[in-house]
Image (cartoon, rainbow over all chains, first blue to last red; front, side, top):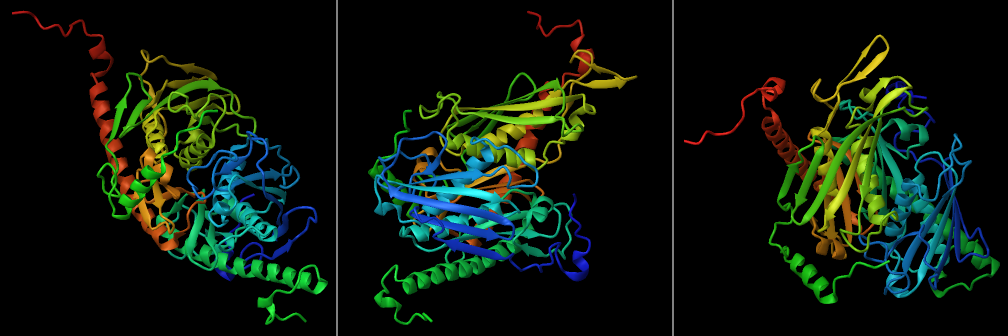
Length: 281
Length: 297
């Protein structure tokens, strides 16, 4: 079904009633699985993903399917299991058959999934302090329960939350979101607006990109654009995307802090010395 | 599975320290490509690309098949990449490594998803007969920057390729041999080229183009940008790695456009030269009774 963008010019509202710079509702939880080292659940609109982190642990037997990154050497990938001096980040993504509208069976060797696994492993390796855990492995399992656009962004955000929950030392949050543009690639209209956080319908019809940044900085860890777009559109889309990442970071930060407060109040953890000024009512 | 030998600590430090002073081991500028060369084969659709010591061969071929049931009006277009053990012992037959998966995905996104080849023109009879175009990419020698070389080879092979001419008369489809009718080129819409930036250092502040294998092994991140000469981005892939300032990524894209335009004009020139070389004056010249023998005097 083609996306009707004709009304956008009149009311400046998108198909789901958002303005150009509005994110969809983000709902996130951490520590959802009691037995796991780290876990999280994240919703970005109707895109819903679950993440479980195991490790850092002793590397298991090598499996062919898992795509890995040998720690900080982001370009290399496929590092030696257990022999490297950095921890290895192994990512597994399972896309549930019922997650999208048309039920599609995806094998484990689907190239798109493999590419996402590799992107996630290299993205997280850029922020995790993998050099602190030599000869070990950090396994991140992600389950996609529902897809409605911005899948890669949701996966990155969920993985970040789960890594925080697992207590793996990291530089800062890696947060991601998507950005698009209202013009099609052929139209060279100057009035095209950049859009933040595309849903599935918009993702199919409009040019867009996924951007992941480190913390509050403007530094881009991952940038994935899969559609044809004029080079002049890139700057606007990137600026909106980076700004969206900062908004996402705030939301994730609140989720982590709320969980921390809850744990202190419950007495699960001792109140640290640096937390005296924290408001715990 | 044998692993690729990693550079030693000394080598690693040497390369990185030289790069801090903007010096590359082979004396190139940071944004300078190695000499790019292209040889066409005797057949149509064979392109052999060398980029320094990297060598990639692409061969396009066509066959008649039945279109996919869900896309009855489209022809079939596939790109198959193969990294054989000939290139490096780390590659195995029938077991794609991460590098291979990423290269084939990138080529797919750059050439196929950007609509460079008009697949609708490949359909002959809706739902019954269509051309299936296949490009096989073979990496013959690996000295870094496989992606840019492979993409150039694929585009060159497809633009050079000629498929047999066909006609439809009264519901009868005829495919002509090259002797009956000149084969026809594919319906080609735009030529995208990949430009890969490599980033070095903790901050990712050193960026260079066309990294050699040694440089690729010590880099901390990379970004592949695909563009055509009209300034349309077909794909950007910075799949993790060291964080880079958004502003410098935009600069990288602008330089990439200059490089893509450069590659585009080079390819146009080579295609024109090859066409001139092949043009012997059509069938009449071929059927001529004279031969090229020079009489002895």
